[in-house]
Amino acid sequence: MHQLTWQKSSFSGDESGNCLYLAATPDGTLRIRESDTPHEIIATTPARLSHLIGALKAGRSPRPPYAAGHADSGAAS
Image (cartoon, rainbow, N blue to C red; front, side, top):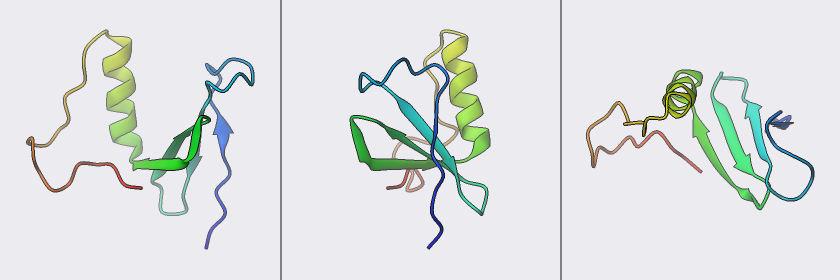
């Protein structure tokens, strides 16, 4: 099993427990976790994360690129 190397977001403040961490896997997918619940990890792709960040920066609520109720939600544990 590959050991993930977690990197703290530069926008995360001090160690007060409000930190976001990101790790890349050998297959190119990304894992994201929050410091309050480090055992809860979501998986995404660089393209989906870029879409989310772009939407948030633009002040929009991001809409997923799939139909509601679709089996592929884009998130995994």
